[in-house]
Image 1 (cartoon, rainbow, N blue to C red):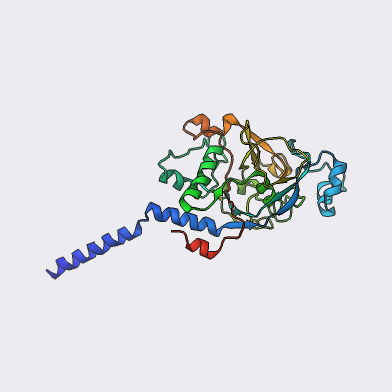
Image 2 (cartoon, rainbow, N blue to C red):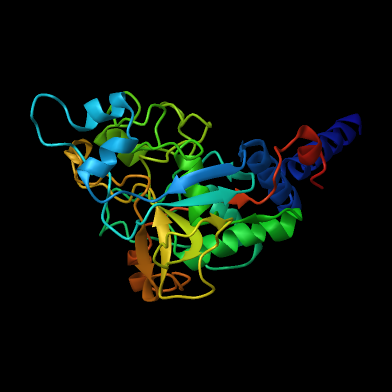
Length: 325
């Protein structure tokens, strides 16, 4: 009899243990929001000059000497990049921003998959055969369409009651350039140094969204120069000379702005073939942005990352984190 009672107690203990091991969807969402709040970087507001320049002579007026030496070495070799970029990023003009928070890391597949699970949406499957470096692992940065990125950040706002959303183009550039400094890359120094502050080609293929082997930019934000291009909330419109305060772009348009590094071209990527400087404005046209990856064709187009902003003009405190219920 005592043997039977002992067996029942053991089975009951195992059953209760199994129940405790399960995490409810609510607790999963709560844990996600808390972790994201802990990783938010407050970017103090201020003014900066946005955009790029059109000529080397004009460029030289802005650059500090150490960046000039880096760009135009005295060896006579061709500069490793042109600071004025691909176009669409002039004239330069003054922009004033309120403070905001930006995620320290890009959104991972694990984080995005929780959103699709909770909302009962299809699991997104990028086409790895076409882009072999895009490996769908839980800890890697998610490559998404604009609509997916926008909905994810808005979902965070809904479940947290906090003003999450995509960053504006101006916010992204301001944070990536260490509050508007005239630097080419979003690294700790503004330079591009493979194996020092930028991963090698082989490392890039395996890099996790929250990888911290290489230093962040001076504000503490990672992977602004070595991961995917990232979505912003802005529709594209040409720049004008007039000063702007908290610009958000036009209400509609034909293309969304993505910012930052946007590809990986092969073992020689560190030589400049795929580099995208911080002032560049890449445009994804309408046909490529509004989709939910329900088909293989949609999946082939998803190559851009998401880094949510928190539109709150103060730093996140422990009280904010503890308030998440």
